[in-house]
Amino acid sequence: MSEIRYPIITISREYAAGGRSVARGLEKNLGIPFYDKDFVKATAAASGYSEEDILQEGEQLSRAGRFVTNLLNPVTYQSSSDNIFYAQKQVILTLAQKPCIIIGRCANVILKDAGVDCFRVFLYADEEHRWSRAEEIAENEDADLKRYLSKRDSMRETYYKTYTGHDFGDVHDYDICLDTGKLGYERCISVLTQIMEGLAAK
Image 1 (spheres, rainbow, N blue to C red):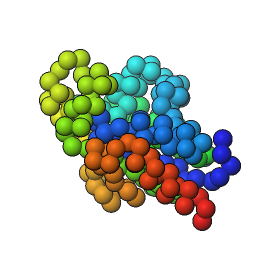
Image 2: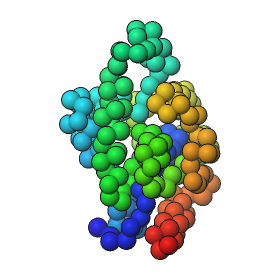
Image 3: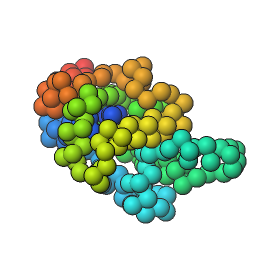
C-alpha cells in the first residue's frame, strides 16, 4: 500500500464504458485498492442479503420498481433496493477512511455530502464502442445489444436519480469526464494517474 495520501477516487460510468478496466489500471499505477468483489461481500454482510442479491439489485432500479415502492408507502416502506443502498452507503463511508477506488453506487455524491476528500470521475463512450465491450463482457445472454444497453442505462439512471436526486451524467457531479471510446483505456488511466499524483504532491 502506498504511503502517499491520495483522495478517494470514485468512478461513475455508462454501462460497458470500461469502469473496471480503468480502475484496475489505477490500482496498479497508484498502489491503492480497487474494491469490487470485496465490496459485494462487505455489503452482503452488512445488509443480510446474499451476494447474488447485491449484484442483481446493487445498482439497478427500474422505473416500474420505483413506482411500486412509492405506491406502497413512500414514507415507511423500504424495498430490498433501499436496504441494499443504505448498506452500501455505510460500506462506502467505511472504505473511504483510507485511499481507495470505488466504482458506481452513487459514491461520488455520498462522499461529497459526507465531506470526504474525493476525486470524481465519469467515463462514457459512443454506442458502437459499448456494443463491442458488452459482447466481450458477455452479460447480455444473447439479447439484442442496442435494447440491452438502453435497458441497463435506464436502470442505472433511475437508480442514481432515486438515491441522489441528481441526473446521471450531469457534469457538475464530477471533477473530470473522459470518453473511453475515443481516448482508449490506457490513455484514460495515464491521464488520471498524472492528475492523482499531482493532487497527492500538493
